[in-house]
Amino acid sequence: MPGRDVAEYAAEALASLRAQTFTRWRAVLVDDASTDATGEMFADAEASDPRFHLVRLPRPHGLGAARNAGFDLVDTPYVGFLDADDVMTPTALERLVSSLSSSGSDVAVGAYVRLRPATTPEGAVQPGEYTVGEVQPWVRASTDPARRATTLAEHPDVSGNVVASSKLSRVELWRRHALRFPEGTLYEDQVIAQRLYVHARGIDVIPDVVVHWRERADGSSLTQRKAATAVLGDYLAGLRAGLAVLDAAGHRAAARARVRLMLEMDTPALVRIAENHPDPAYRRLVGAFVRELAARADLEALILDPETAPLRSAAVLW
Image 1: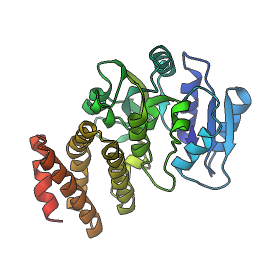
Image 2: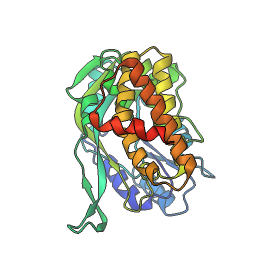
Image 3: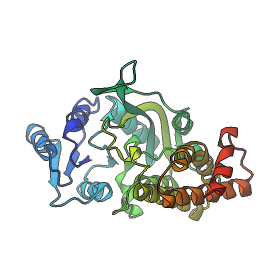
Image 4: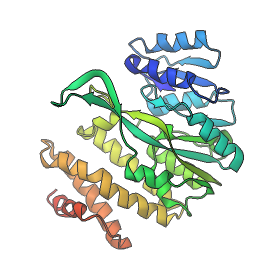
């Protein structure tokens, strides 16, 4: 569990680990040089429960490097990653561990939902209150119905589930293929998810919601900062890198599934932002990416949702 300046949320994340029905876990808490009370909260957890182990980084390293620092200390057969502002559901570890134990697969993937700020009927944010969303269609397509020991070739839609905290995997898989999170960039889970799927000898998917993925009320979540040109650059680089992993491994069906999902789910929101964005570089980045995906879709003769049709004409303008 990595965290930097997440004291407002860390107590709930830590409590969700303590509440697990599967109790034989060990959590490496990585304080990424926090300037708030995050480090103290992690230290209190370590002092009160021997299953917690704290690592303090002397300077901020970023999420990918913090996850890698925690992974280096893993001594269990399985590994999962929970960000310190998210919440694990009580039976998550039980379901994921029991699935891998019985199937012999390398990766188990569960569903996830958004944890969004609660609002009044008038639309005002209620401080400190969050509501749990529904399982979105692309998440359901990746995890429902349940499958045991499937593969990326057999179930290409699993490639749409890229959230790091929705998975449990064998440590041996990571070490066999020298897997690491990319460092010094954002959206590092895009690449590692596809590498796990490509290298896994078996993949289990379960429809159970295993994590609540928080969108912070103050708008500081990474997924809420895509209007910044620098963040957009890292976001698009992550999407392209994940797709490149599938291409390089020859997983055409999974690559097609990712292109379809990007065009239907990722790019429409970016186009809406770009239409009125003051930075022409932002518009150019979005336009180039949409044209690139559209060209691939044409090449593969993908039939896209009619609502995505305006993307092509909008992209031409940039």
